[in-house]
Length: 568
Image: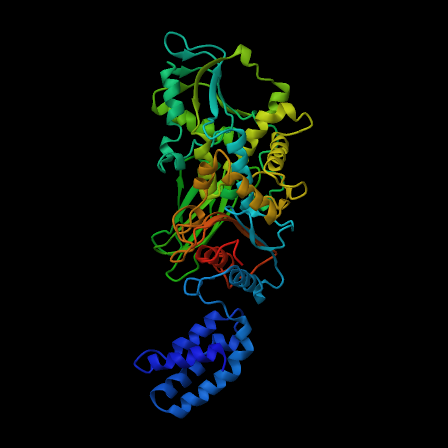
C-alpha cells in the first residue's frame, strides 16, 4: 500500500466519528504537483466516500480499492509535507539528501537551480548544486549594491541637496534670480522616511529656504538633475516595466520614489465612472478615466497605460459597486515634478515664485555648464545616513534606491574611470573592483545596473555566498545584516516561513522577476552554527506553487539542522 493510501485509510477512523470523509481525499489532491482533471472535479468519488462511510462497509472497500489503484500513479508528484512537521536533519548526509530531494521535484525538471550553503564558523561547504553556474539574480543583485554603498560611501555618509542662486536675497527677502535646486541623488524625500506622510517629504528643504530669509523668488524655480550622466533608466530595463512603480525613472532630484499611488473607488451605481484618488495629490499627471462601475459580482480589474515619455495616464476597466482597487504609476521627468511640488510647499509657507518651473539634465549642461563659482549656496540639506538608505532599499527591495546608490558611488569614482561614458558605467566599474576585493572571481559577476531589474544581469551562487561571507567580517557587518529582511518579521519576508524554524532566524534578500526566483542570506542552525546560503531558480514558471513552496523549504531545513558542517 502506498504512503498516500495509508494516509487516507488512517483518516477514515476520524471521519467516521462525524467528520467529512472527503477531507483526506481532498488533502491528497492538494499535495499533487499536477492533479489530473478528473481529480479536480471529484464530486462523484466524494459521494461514494460518503455512501461507504455512513452506510456500507463494502462501498468503502470498493472506493479504497479504486483509490489504491489510482494514487500510486501520481505518488511521485506529491508535494512534501510541511518542513515544519518534517523531522529536522540530524546529520549532514540527511540535510544534503533533503535539499537534493526538494530541488529534484518534477515541477523543476525544465528549470535551472543553483545553490550553495557554507558555514561561516568553519568555512566548510554543507551543500552545493550548480554553484558556479551563471544565473539571473533578480533583486539578489541588491546585496552587491548595498554592500558596495556601505563599503565605498560608509554607513554615516549623507547626500547633499543644494539650493543655489546668483546672489543672496535682498533686505526684503526677494531673490532676484533663478533658484536652482541641485540634487545629488538623495532618495529620502519620501513618505517612507517620514512616517508614511508624503506631506512632510519636502518640509526640511522648505524650512531651510525660510531660514535663509527668502520670501519671494523673482526668477525660475529650476530642478537640476545633471549630477548623474546618462539615461533615466537602468541598463537593460524593459520598456513595459517603466510605467510601473518598480521601473520608475532615476533622477538626481527624486521624491516620493518618483511614483504616484492611486486608489480607485467604484461609483454609487452601475455605469458611473470610477473615482480616482492620488497620493500625493498632484496635477502633474493627467488622468483619462474610462473605468466604469459594474454591478455587484461584475468584473473587478483596472488597467493603466502611461505612454512614454508622457504624464498622461489612461485608465480602463471596471469595479463592482462598493469595491476599491489600489495601484501606482511612475512619473516622467522627476526633477520637474520635484520643483512642481516644492513650489506648492513654498507657497504654503508664504514664499511666492514669480517665474516658471524648469528642469535641467546632463545633456542640457553640455551646452549650458553650471559654474558653481558664480553661484551662492543659499540653503542646503543632507539625506538620511547611507546605512538607513541601504536598510530601506533592502527591506522593501526598492529598485530606485538601489540604482541611486550605485550612481552615487559612480559619481564619486568617475575621475578614476575616464572611459566611463555614464555615471552608471562608473558605478559598475567600482562594483567590479569591490567584488574582486570581496574575493569574487572574474567572470562570476556580470552586472550592468544596480537593482536586479535588468534581464542581462548574471551571477553565480558561489559569488553571492562569497559576498555574504566577506560582509560577515566587514566593518559594516552588523549594518548589512540588519538591513536584510527577517523571515516572518519585516520587509519582503514578512509573510514567509511563519511558524517554522526559519521564523525570526533567516535574514535574506528576496528576488523575483519573470521566471526567476532567488533568496540569499544568513541563517543559524538548531546547533547554533552560522551559515550563508544562496538559492537561485531560473527558467521556471508554475502557477500552482508560490515562491514559499519553491524556495522556503531549504532555509527552513537549514534552520532546523541539528548536525554540524564538520561532522558528516
